[in-house]
Length: 390
Ligand code: MN
Image (tube, rainbow, N blue to C red):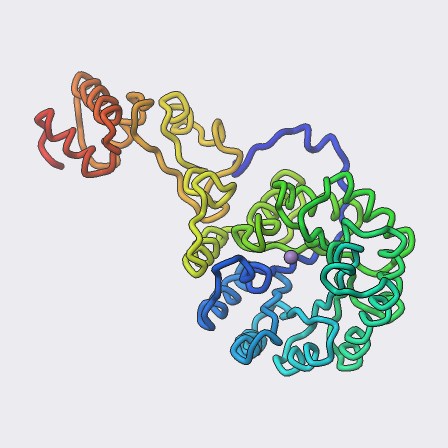
């Protein structure tokens, strides 16, 4: 058995769209993480890894930002990946030209929709915004691009105005509308309400773009999908502005294992792409980060280790191999005989029961004195009770 989760999950009927498109924005929103700038090589390797993972759509960057950025996006677009390559563009013709120049398959173009954004960022009236925002849609459609229209700050926008904006986008035949929860300020129930309201008037595919300011990005994304959205944005390790975005690894594994909705990802590559992004961003992955953290399949307490040695699913919902991780048994003050015996076996030591008890006592004592029990320390302990090296 590879995983075992609550049987009560299946008591609920989940209605997802048959086809769900995950678009990864590690290379765009992820790169907007303060202090992060990928090199061209890093961006290309991340795009390749995402493609290996079977991400269907990659938002590769924001070509208008610089010539270098344009060249990187172009390079990714010409890598021959299976994933569709899209990029960000404001509602300006120059932005669309930069996108066209980058050979992408499509764009996400956006306009602030909340009064807060209109007043304090754009300095537009609602009518001005409505008139402006379709310029780029029309131009991009005319040039054969896939066009997604995103209402920024949608979750804090007036519903009637938001509907007008999306309906206008629909009248210009956009391929998808995006609901941006720009500051992660919605609840899953609020998202459910919003998506269902929009679906009363809008027939176009809906995508979710959820930020994680309250730790709800993944829950909100799933709430959107359950309410009828058919696309969702993610970033590797959940990086992005402030608290970041819905994390790819959490969303994909939650959908697959808890909701039984397999998106066809090659999940065994997840740890690898997570490490690559961590390295390229210089951002460490918290030890307790779901799916990819160092502690997710690491056990120390004697009771847990004993059980895990016999049956891993006692203290793991799924086995580490599913996401390219490895199980680790850590020796420390909570270790019992079984964990120490397993470690001795792994190192090739044979000991008597008395010697085993002595080693367990030493392991606890050493750890309590503040020394971390790595392999060298462990071997030292074994040597000190007069056993020959294997
Ligand atoms: Mn964003």
